[in-house]
Image (cartoon, rainbow, N blue to C red; front, side, top):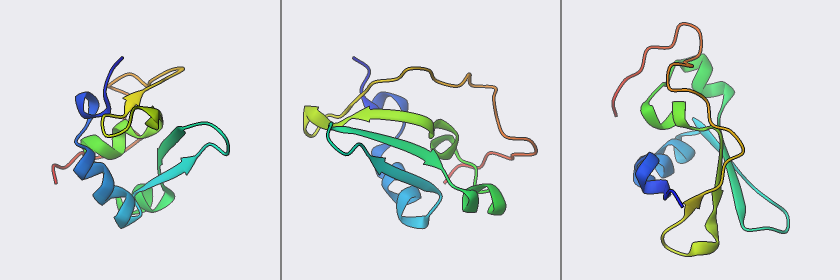
Length: 89
């Protein structure tokens, strides 16, 4: 299983959620969370490697402090939103 930390920095993900650039939605009965970048991220062009990775990113949080990914599909790396300029945080 791929771990979340193998795809992105979990600390930077928490910061992006706190800033409102990424939305975190929990499944009502299963230990799954889906992360998506928000309209605010698009409007302010707050593109980072983390926000770009959060396009339907599904995480299985049942593994405790080492959450793993469970994905139906993941966008290709070159699928940046139109006009996006990626910046490092």
